[in-house]
Length: 319
Image (cartoon, one colour):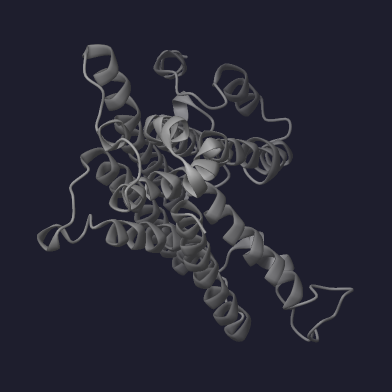
């Protein structure tokens, strides 16, 4: 088994193991509270494990500093830690996650009632999908973290694999994606905080969030998430392309497909948010909730779906 495949297996085991434990506790205590904590937390656990394996956390004992790889890993850990803590805090306040109600038993419902929730079998499918989400999202990070393992075992061309190219254009193409990771995390965090603050104000009951970034975009939190993961992909890509060209043997077989395999991550997240669980569900909910509301219809008409537009916000404030 190549080192890349070993790393994929390691990440799969960590993400799958975290979600398996989370499912067991959730089924045993019939609680909504652990889902997002474990789901986003598994990103942190897997990335920390890869960083340790590569020596990024053990520099005094012979580890090698790879600044760009370290920044990518820190960005992913920051994203996962922030999201897990935010969603866990939110569900503790609310007490339940309405998305999960259909997976749990109602009062008086028996276990394995296929005509009702089919608890806990249907719940297991949700946790399986969540584990797959974590594994797929981490593909570019997992493959990028495989490069130092290849180098330490006599892999090809370390100068090209882990060091940034020289020249202003190459430097810009190196810096921008890494900066995009942290910018995306910041935008998502700010959007979540603004909406959470808006919802906590009882005066806003029955009104959609249109403050801060939400004046500029209908879904700025999703914009931040997409910016984060597309930036992660483009940050990892340069290290995978030389590996694809220069690797040989088992590692070469794996890395020939590495750029395409890594691309599954941002494509999957984009599909998820645009076609499955993100925007479509909220659009349907909001359309029903604010049906016939002329102000909401105007908000929808002038506000971008995803990319924040500060000029729209200025127009809204003056109207």
